[in-house]
Length: 496
Image (tube, rainbow, N blue to C red):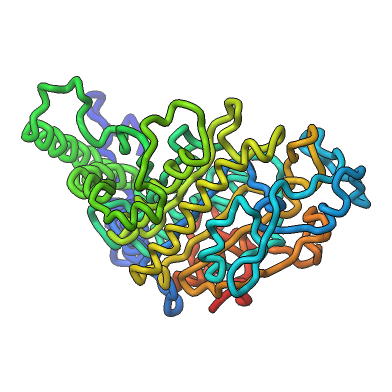
């Protein structure tokens, strides 16, 4: 019908896809409508897939992300050859494309290594706190990446793709399994208190999944942990009743707007986010308040004596507080029904560095961060176990790539996307094992034909959650997308 068919003072009535399909509801249009309604309802965040392809071993995940590229060689993957050849010119036996000028002499591990646990796993002195739980951990030493660029490497570990536009693993888990607590988000992100890592919020974006599946950011180390959850201090004129009425008005306007645009799933997701924020005003403060934790729990995390200021010289004691506080909050969120918690360490490029990108001085940069991480991670694992939660909670430690066995500037190490370490524990993981080996230098996997990739880690975690990573897909731009792209194998050798 042409525009001239209508009087000049009229506008053709807008028809939604639903109305168009209803006109042919007696045939294929009706079938298409039913399919569309089901799909739109899921995408709008009204429901999730709630898919279990097999009995799950776990129902929660904690991802510990070391932003900046932690050195496997100085923490977990001891190489005696580096000790023997320390200071000699590095010779990789092949052309090496370094990110910076990081092909100096071989550099031995910065700290001494000792065996821990019944497994006798070698850990460096700076990670000694993990020795108490090392027999619960499975180390994967033959990880490989695709890039030596921080932003791309970070996205690869977070989303399974090295470019923006894809959902985070936490968003996939949230979409696939749904919430266990309607008053708290399903996917929570606890960034470094100093800021966000490379890519910022894209690391926990929902992309083409429902917007309600993206990570909710909480800063436990800040005075205001959740931005915009409460009225600003200067809003003294805002009362409890007026605030509630304002939220209700926003929701009413949002629904009216959505009813006229029922083919836009983002609107319903936005409404649901406002509703969740209102419920969080009651649930979040209690979940984030660690003051009522018993003294022995605070001592376990190293939080029994908190420094009076965070602004002076950064040291290992303060880094323990930073990381342990996030770990304790993570445990409180998990036991209240949050499915996926992501904890970040490192996000400051000022000098001295407060991230893991140790080009200049590994000891200066890794030392405080590692001691803080080790204490917090060890406490989290022990705390989950004593509460009976470790058996159904997967803990994943990762970073975007590793660091080179050769030196940079004498005391630093360059980027190494060719080999690095992940470790996992809990939730069906077999502890006290090491899977995959790196070569004599820790430069590349010993078996270069069969490295472990991030897709394998993601596939294994999804498997433990009861999900077949090949079957949880969403059609996007004509492609059935999944967390693991077209790759990934479950690492059965580390399953209990």
